[in-house]
Image (cartoon, rainbow, N blue to C red; front, side):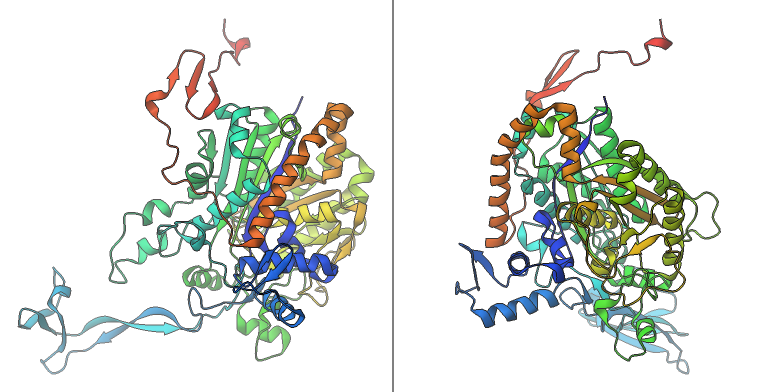
Length: 633
């Protein structure tokens, strides 16, 4: 019997806000919300942005004063303006004045050369060729430079790309816990994983009491590693900027750290761990590990996610040099204007000119179906399959290829085998990669249209979350999953509102690409998450709606087990709601256990069948069965 991986908790932060309890999803369907849902969305975002908090059902400002109608209207406007894709804000760096160095060539002057005077402590231990100390008073030196040379002069430059999917204005993950020089991507990992675990409503200690220590897994990675000043970027720039490399920059810069930090500081797990990187498909690569682990019975719980913080000048300029990003100049050309519409920078399947980078951290907690029922977990859906395929021989490493035809076709075929033709044809939708490049819009729609024809699907609903939050690289498909869980729960498909009309070169005869919110209702039963990554990293995942998942569980476990689960779930839902209210009433409180509850290795005991580990009630059972019995005597 194959165990069903069900999603029992999810959370994180991105340009649309806090993911748990569908707050970020609601920001993307703002136009379809009623007044009550809009107020709830504003309350969640205002708390993140340090603008207002919710106390006893009333929004209050920093001084504790209740907001009147005018103050609330002003707050709502600030919340909307300070979320989703927008112009780069100067809280981290000024996109109009990015610091850098300009190399200037010096020429000798009739035998006198050039002279420089500076503090003696700054004199290089080994003088460059042509340098001679002309004067030394013990504190300052004058150096003559014969025959010319090159000097670096500090200057600034304006970025050609000034739009991005940034975290909500005023939200600083570093301020939520003792971040101690953590790169921003790892700050996002701590906050996002904590949000997912706490939003589940199940204390982590309850989980570790019910499963063996090695039946837990954490899979997470970043695609670009940690490239800001506290990570690899700072290490590589230190000497060039006249500084020194710190002891933290190299280890904290590794792309495995989003998993390592969750194990070490959030969960305290000694179970399986890993970081599978696949460019823009990285999240689905890690999700596949979690799904297959649970299906096989190797693990009963898996925490999987990604965190990426690529909004640094060097990364922006790197992608811009590839002509991959929507520059201000090209956006203006598209619209025939002089000032770009930063909010509409990402335009999947419309007339576009490149993608828009975003920052995001998203995590999910999965369990096997039996454990979820036993613990009374709230079930947000199920992940039945994730398929991964490469592109074969390539002319360009960034060009698309055949791998995505395979992943999507296999995902649809597997869903049809599980659920039948009618449900897949009439009750599924696609979360497109939708990167907002001219090449993506034609190649991805061709794949969708071809698969739709093969399975006789008509008017297949398609959306693309990158229109709202940008391309966060490793967590891009995690952003898709967050949005899809909202669609599967509430039935409203976010429209690609940054596009006024579809491009003329699409292959969309069988598709219904949503430009406005679409009320799918009962049609929102199956989501296909599609990802196309640089280098031929293609992946497609299949996610089932909560009601469909519960129907499958009822067939397997029976009505009595489901009734008992619903009774146990009441306490879990109450605990989750209390956590949501806590986040609305003030800053998020991430789990961060630095040096806390360390395992005393002297208390570890083992025999030839079992390992006892402090803090893990069931310990670890050692293998006793021969899996290759048919091959040995």
